[in-house]
Amino acid sequence: MEVGLFSIGVARTADPDIVGQIARTADDMGFASLWAPEHVVLFAQDSYTSRYPYNESGKISVTDADLLDPFVTLAFAAAHTSRIKLATGICLVPQRNPLITAKLVASLDRLSKGRLLFGVGIGWLTEEFQALGIPPERRAQRTCEYLEVMRVLWTQDTPSFQGEFCAFPPVKSFPKPIQKPHPPIIFGGHTVPALRRAVEVGDGWLGFHLSSQEAAPLVQRLNQYATEAGRNVDDLFIGVVANAPVTREGLQQYRHAGVRHLVVRLPTVAPERLEAALGELREHLVVPAQSL
Image 1 (cartoon, one colour):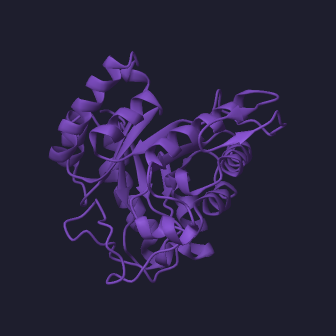
Image 2: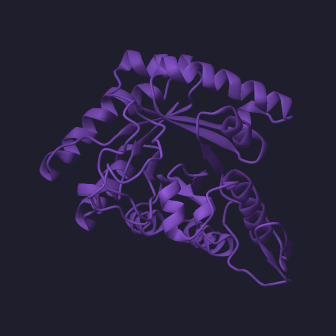
């Protein structure tokens, strides 16, 4: 079992010195991954009606904090590290031009020497789509097509594409990713369609803000869909961002739920306490996880 950290590029972790400190320390201490989220714009809590799907209130708690672009953040972290995986958590694929996203993914995978995990999702904030001038309707279909576009760009020397949402004649697009055929595509989301996309379109799944009890039936369903899709379950990334601090016993419970990659939240401590706090997480979670 592996243990990763969520997240960098948000609020206090948008400070370059702190990003560098977190990245270097996590890399040295054996954490498996470092995740950076994405929203282009957010809204005051009383000015949007879309429901945030990952808490009971249906609202994002922080909307005025700094929120860096995940690709810029991870590229900065890559320069401070040599081993840890760098993950978008998650990239809102339907809000981005797929040719530009393909270039960003390939560039970051190249600069990190093959350490990118491409976490993706279809988005939930209708008002954000509207602000960007992108129809929120059929965003799942748009996401799947955009990922198909990216695969073509990553794997073919002279790719072309003709689809519903994107079309272009034969082009040249370099560099290609270090990881072959491309970095793992890891879908977020807890709905049945999201789980099916994770195994039919992607290479795995990241549950968000889940307890081990909540994760277990979702992982079971994911495994079922993978078998139905002819995918080898052992080849899939199966991860969860924990909904609360995790004890050693809790670590075992996540593993029994079928989680292979547990992502925990960064400690909320002063910068001078950060290294010690990550050291405690290492002893309580990273080291024990290696034997699970």
